[in-house]
Amino acid sequence: MKTGYQTIELDRILPARITLNSALEEPCRDSHWHKEIELIYVLAGQMRVRVNEQLHTLSRGDVILINSSELHRLDEGKDSPPEYLSVHLSFEFAQKFDNQLETTAFFVEDDAVAELRKTMHKLALVKRCGGADAAVFREYALLMDVFYVLFARCRREKQINCCGNTKNGERKAKIAIAYMEDHYRESISLNVVAELVGLNPVYFSKYFKDVTQTGFIVFLNTIRMKHALEDMVIHGMSSADAAKCNGFSSVKSFENICKRSYGLTPLQYKKRQFRAV
Image (cartoon, rainbow, N blue to C red; front, side):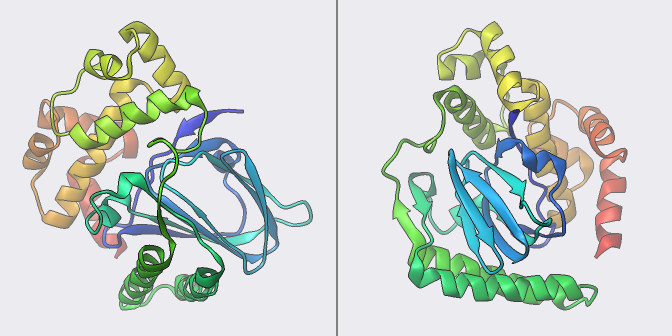
């Protein structure tokens, strides 16, 4: 069974990715983690979610929260494929309201379940209807309700180390990824990150690829590209300025990486995002 870091592409307007699923995607069958906080709400059928080796069986109406960087995997139910809503909440957006969020975890207890279930059900209805230009405002309002419940009812100080209750084999990779997320605008070398986690650079390179299924440089450039494209789409930056502000050595490097990932230049990607709205 593979284990890897998953890059989540958030909505260009919303601080989240909201997805209605009628069947599980193949990557979800593998254990993975991501920076985003994830909520899953089952609409029909049954599914199993394994979080940090603890197995949860979910049925219609059940809600589960997966904290940032928690190792998890999803399985189809025995009887029928589940229909469920998954919401990946931006960790960076949440961090704006709590700069100590790295030491915080969210635990959904009985008094918060009903509120989250109601809000997630409304989100599913809005997502199903779709199409309407004003729907994004409703989605945003409901997402703010989710953030409110999490921060007001579910936030607790972690009683475990900063990397969560995960295997030691992934801990160093998570430290490296956190450093890359914080310093992607700067010049980052494999040697510096290897030293940070206490590994030989050659061993670290192989170890990082084994854990994340991605090479160090490719992973770093994916982080840079994500932020550069956001700067273009949301803040109206040119591709040259976005490349410069997000750690790329040149605009050509940014364009080549974007083409390899999406088959589009950054400008073409930006135009496609606007057409999709």
